[in-house]
Amino acid sequence: MKNVVILDHPLVSHKITLLRDKNTNSKQFRELVEEISMLITYESLRNLPTEEIEVETPICKTRSKVIAGKDIAIVPILRAGLGMTSGILALLPTAKVGHIGLYRDHETLEPHEYYCKLPEDIAERDVILLDPMLATGGSASAAVNFLKQRGVQHIKLMSILAAPEGIERVTREHPDLLVYVACVDEKLNEHGYIVPGLGDAGDRLFGTK
Ligand code: PRP
Ligand code: URA
Image (cartoon, rainbow, N blue to C red; front, side):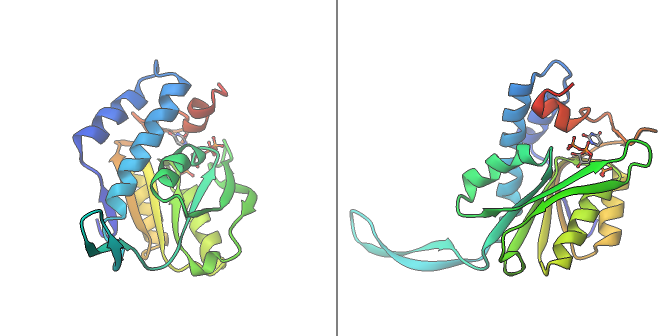
């Protein structure tokens, strides 16, 4: 699939199996989401531009690479995207963080916005959009629309689990979007949940059910 990277790595697969387990508690779930997010970040930023600067080691002066290019903003989709944020900030500590609050209507499965706070200079930044679950793709697609309306030009979506339906929708509605997902599951059920999935990511992260 064009513009879609599916991570295929034993470390990621192992951690996703633990995430799926209904006996994994919220503390373990949060830790796993954070760890998987770091691994997705590592893969998705492989092509980040670099430039050489001069640095003095204890031995001699040398030229060595640092990250260059546009500044980055991380934008978690509330609530569940919050669980991914700390893992990415650990690797990109200077990134700014915006928030988009969306909830899915249980009947229609359509996303509804309830919060949006983005860095003032968001249009000047490359954006990493976070949502661990890409189910129908409605929430991610709506969030990409908000960002584009505010002038953002380059967006990477990072998700942990996706349904084929969600990938199809976001890539159809946003052919310019780059999607990084740790695993693609079988299908959606009649309630819009990913099967086999891991249940409701927000509830499992925050212990609300
Ligand atoms: C969940 C999840 C995604 C969305 C995915 O959020 O965190 O944002 O569903 O589904 P979609 O691809 O069909 O739009 P939810 O609406 O349950 O809110 P929450 O994160 O606050 O629990
Ligand atoms: N949101 C979740 O948290 N889980 C799903 O399976 C689908 C949407």
